[in-house]
Image (cartoon, rainbow, N blue to C red; front, top):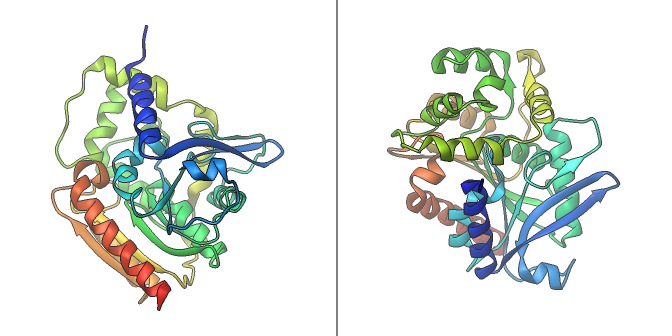
Length: 305
């Protein structure tokens, strides 16, 4: 039987090609491959420096790059060279290495971008992708010009998980982010959005089959995120950071973002999108894209000064 999510994904892939973005797989090192959506000219002229400023979009835990960022890709491609990776164990990206940390994801991404000829970029990270973005900004200040983060934190603390699980009614982080049933996926969607959206069960079932592969490895990725309070380190980031948040985010509430802004310092700004939840970029794409483009323009203007 045809999986409708795969059909929708194929249509999205066709749309991306029409706006000048194509799939390309980079061998990071032996045993590790990362799949990217890249500007078409990157494939024809690998390692050539992009004329347009580069934006890298990093997806969350419950989808791949295209499923997460299609509405942003189409808005940004006119003025930016857009790169959208599938992080390791998502989409078409894999490794035989045992490391499951955000640091490993950041290292693989940085190596992949450099192989693609990217010298400088702005990172846009959603949820899990935001944690990878923070780590990459910390480790590769010469590569990362700025960071936009939506619905994410610097690190997942044990106390933060306990509070989130209590608020959402899940028994574990894996149960919340790796649903194995239609009811579990419905519950996850209900905490991700401002207003509940109805989907037929057959489509939800297809989504489970299409987007939740590599369950063992993804469970290990979740385990690698959790740290104790004493292990928290707030990095001194030199780049401009913009926290772009859904007003009604039930996963990482506004006060978490506000507290993070204070801890990150004067280079950090904070903006709220009204009537949006954790999935602000999907619920209010026009407003989200406008806020995103405004920040990107200001970063590029600073670079030219």
